[in-house]
Length: 313
Length: 313
Image 1 (tube, each protein chain N blue to C red):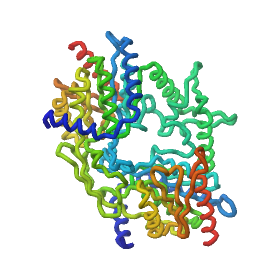
Image 2: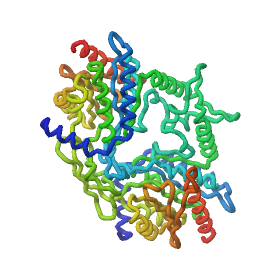
Image 3: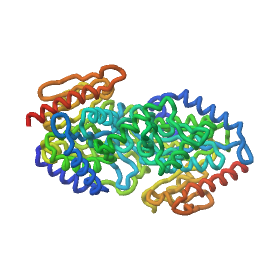
Image 4: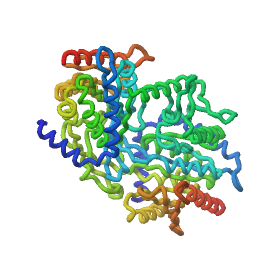
């Protein structure tokens, strides 16, 4: 696809998308967050900021949304990576799908309030002993990073919300230049139903099988990289279920969108192993053992690459 | 659709569905739950049991599931109704979509652990004053009903899991006959991709728009009603965004599936008003005021109709 038609498609995607609610409020939060962090110093320079995207986007099939197509992602990768970025001295804008995994909450059960707490005889609630450490850690770390101004959490559901908020983030991160990083772990829909051609009412099921034609979502990575925040450091993700085509696709992505690194992962082994694809090498990154996270060595590697990138600009 | 082809379609749906994990465990839980409740007495007879279904089902588009179609439902209706059924002396099998609203948790924010608790100076966690009553109520009521054996919660995600678990529930509720009720509030997919014709790997986006043909899910309501648990009391739901066709569709549903009542609701007003459609009348049910639930008068009406039904059998 040539650059001009992509710009046209992108313009038409945004023009036809439903208006983002709360856009002013999100912009204000972002400006404050970036301002606050630009006065802080990190290791050997100003504090760095990474935008971590996490979870899957949805594509509505009807304007008054009853049905939609969802891209599955637990958000585990994004939440875990956020913890390691914070530990490495980065501040994080966490753009996440509502309801997915949150930083510091990985060790908790699905429904922590109902599963971790119990009622005592004197009408108090207490944490069950077995969950006590995990619950304390989640609440302590979460409050410390949010109230310290190191973690800004912004939720999305649809692809329309995701891309509009991502544009706001990119625009506000532009001023920190090479100190900014985009770590694009969200599972973004490839196909969508353009808003204006969408059924207004619920699709009826009485009349036989349902035929659907979905359009491709314009390749926003290209616009983000070139227009919205061109001087940042870029890491994107490639997830496939078929490992034969994975590395080839990661490589194409690296070149086509001028990423600085692409993290290639296969659905079935993604918690143990990822391959970091750059212009110069393909590095297999393994977790140290069953109790450790592959994100720990991965973020370490990326922080080093980001340092080199900053020193070279 | 005639009865025979529906039976064939249903058989083929179940034969081709991926095997339900944990089926034995679910069966055992159900047997214990029904056993336990059949020794308890309710108002003027044995304790009644209602199966409340809640939340939306998903339809995978790929066998190694990355993308799926989701039917939106917060699960608010099912969770609220469960509270009122318990209050009316029913025991409840709560068949719910993972991650949706839970009984007694409506007053809580999305992420209660991170939003309701705070860390104190002496390394303890405490509930924030503003959320204190809601949190206490959620934990107290939840534990009391679950540990008392009045509430059994069973989660699902896909349409395949939903229908297989529903069959297990119906089979175990058969022995309580007219004392059983099905309150089918879940948003069940109308269309699906048959498992054997599903793409094994992630659908690739490189080659233009995506055309999809989805098959209709067989009308299980019919089989449930006639075969699985034929002597129970049945309430189904009809949700539409277009109110013109709502009552007509509710009426068709009532007759075609021999429901005892159909709750008709329109997406935009569903929290204030529902219409209870039966063979003899269409009754508008309103909530009393802004702070009350439409489920309160609705469940009261249904409990009365269920009593009449029991007395007549």
